[in-house]
Picture 1 (cartoon, rainbow, N blue to C red):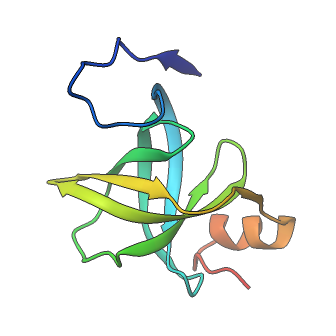
Picture 2 (picture 1 turned 180 degrees about the vertical axis):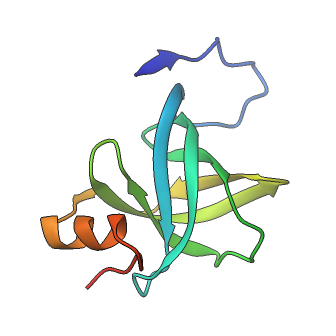
Picture 3 (picture 1 turned 90 degrees about the horizontal axis):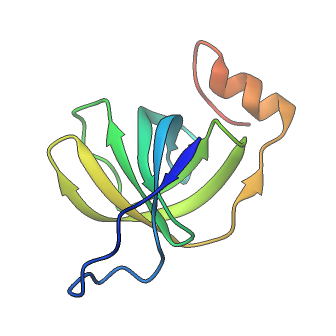
Length: 113
């Protein structure tokens, strides 16, 4: 479920309007298609996403975002990081993930084929 965000301030540099999300689980995946860390999308727009991530290890500058709510995988780059939140800019289109890869991500070892 998404809720429209408040009106954008005049000094906001965002290109796309964002929508707040609730309980929208995501997984951050390396470009080599290896699981990195679980997260939760907080704000979502056509151009990017703000994610609260649950880990402490370093993340690569570019990665893939697996959106568990709509079963899509989307390339993105990190724009900013503050404590346990990161802002990502989408760098490509969302692609549906196959049943096999979805099962792998939901399984014990979190890896795509």
